[in-house]
View (cartoon, rainbow, N blue to C red):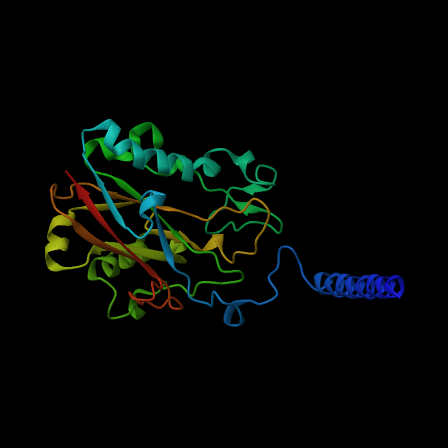
Length: 277
């Protein structure tokens, strides 16, 4: 009797396992390793990209957004420059990313990538924000790198007409866009970027800011389609003369018609603090 029961359970669980295996096989046939099944509005990520910054604080302080160091102390600021070296390693060494190297294309605004190719991200264009220059941390004028979060299939709707800019866009960026429209019309399809102090005191203390290699993310990097070797474009934000010895609250925003800003939900913007002793 026990033998019969044992055989029954062996057969029962074998059939059950086979059914599960068949169901999983059928399920995986409906998936594409590069194309997500649920996209845009149907996905958990949604259609509004967030903005990220680097370097990040150490892993034992993951909730912090404070970049704090002593400007002339190599051992003190080395933690931050090492973090940037690690983050930019894939950009400096094409072979680090699968497929990258064989399909890199030198894109321009009037020269988007052909099918199957990805646009190059040249870290040599970041002015003073390079590893060789310690990202300017040793001069108490650090560089922070910004990137848009990747959303499959998302295409930015550009602010490429100076006559139809939003009221809440900083005046300084409006003037910049107008100047670009007059002098470099072909570069207007850009997701613009601003960084500024959050409060009146922060605005006064943050000092002059420069952006490299340009003030935004060029449109030819979009849409993101999970192509082999793709790397997100970056903007290096150089804080030239922030006031030392005080915490400065900074908010950076990405600007496109289909990017909404929500400080609490961290949509389209990012917050961090900067303090240099």
